[in-house]
Image (cartoon, rainbow, N blue to C red; front, side):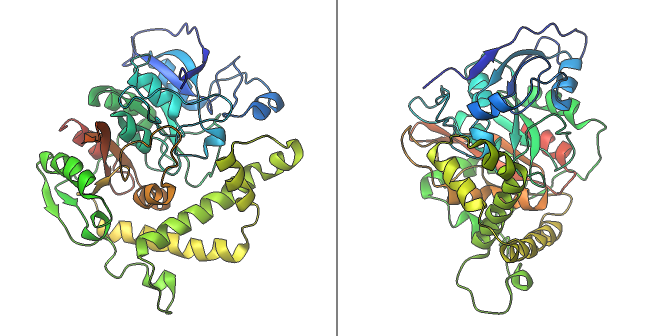
Length: 388
């Protein structure tokens, strides 16, 4: 295991804003003026110029008074959920020693959990804020897609990428996200929690026992109706298919994410021949072979998920599911990536905001609750964070 920082930083930010006195750890996808951006890979570091301006999200947080204390380790090009990096090591998870911190915002989560920073700036494409939050016992928000600028940040899959933060408490989460979200948007308060039996049926008894009390503690009416219940049928065609709709959603997400990742980085990979860790290497190799027919089929499923979220998670409702299918894997264990993405892909495919909250523990390690609202419902989700 290793320190979460790849570079210390001496910030001379001003004071007087809502984040004055708070320390900020920046995932090494975001530009800091005068500091190299490595994106978790040494070859990226070697082949890209040192930025002359802060990324937009960094600039906002610094202008609000936050003090940057370092750049943090990220999984390579942000394409992992485990929190391990073949080049820079595995940041500590103090909430579950001997276990991974979760990725790809691994260093930002670790720095916050260790008390070395108050705000961890990260990205979430397929769960890279929500999963580390769950594994490290933190709060985190994946905002509505497009609400927080990603100017000056290395992309992975642009139609899924978002920027948010990890914190140890709800008040800091609300303050930092308030700065990043900008002008508040009004939405109906959450009065119904959809706790769908077709999703919770895939969750282990131990995780159910740890997370369900956190759902009930919110004091909001619970509806166990299925999330899918016939949804996606048009997107899946008329042929009988034994695979559950949630798995179709996961496959569609994985296909589109991989295709976008290759569009973003394929030319650089072919030109520069970077050395990747085994998992990231395999994912990029597979991404290079995705064809237009696969992308089109996945796009139809994505459209179905957008309609599903509009119909089943309207204003005033939040979907409540675990943020991860279990506690953090032990270092050296392979995560069940497919099980994780089945829980995180609904927000990604629909562009919806998703809040991760500490919930309980399994095997003496944290597990979190994930709340997904209709797109634009970031503020009402943040209001729920205070109920934990």
